[in-house]
Length: 141
Image (cartoon, rainbow, N blue to C red; front, side):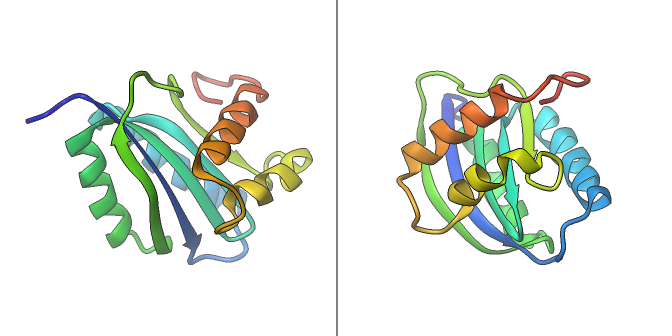
């Protein structure tokens, strides 16, 4: 079973609208638990009803994540933008950035989550910058 580091990025639309703090807290808890168990790190950007996620870890864990996302009732229109080997992790832990929680980031997040708005590499770099700008709370950003 290959365990080399891989990175995946994806876009999806939320099935629940509007997003609520309770909904985000539940989503974060499930992501954190699943990703810790599977050796995954990354970040999820949430703006309006759109998601952009970057997840890093073993290839098989990423394939399993894709299958879970496809079964997850909170996502629809899932589009894998990138899935391939990575030389190092960009994200050391799991992060969630949402305009509902951080309104000052709304414009940047809207750019990150919009389909076909910008190149994948640019999205990943923007998400990395956004997560680094957040205060660390309880091991999460």
